[in-house]
Length: 102
Image 1: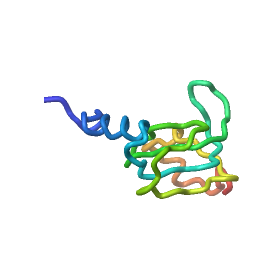
Image 2: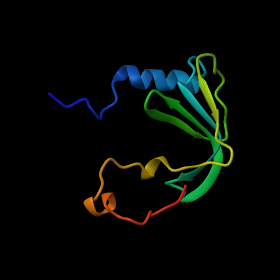
Image 3: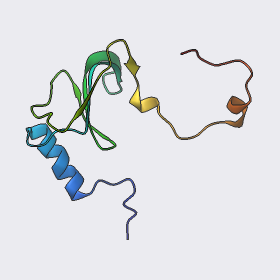
Image 4: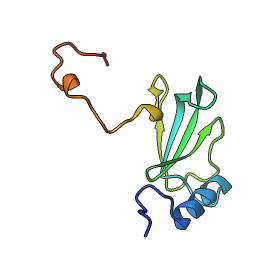
């Protein structure tokens, strides 16, 4: 049997289609977000629709239905979802100098 951990189930796909169609609201809406479009390889400002733990849409449009949706204004923030990675290197854990500043 295939491991379903990283595969979308039919219900998840139907929910995402319902969100894009305006029949269902996303779980989270990030507005005015500056994000890196990995395919176009450029920075864009727009809205990101998220359903549970999946990005459904990223672009200029707003969803038609936001009844059960948490909305976060990300103006002034830079979001790079593609850079989120679950592994680290041991030398990063013990570095005395910060590698970045927030």
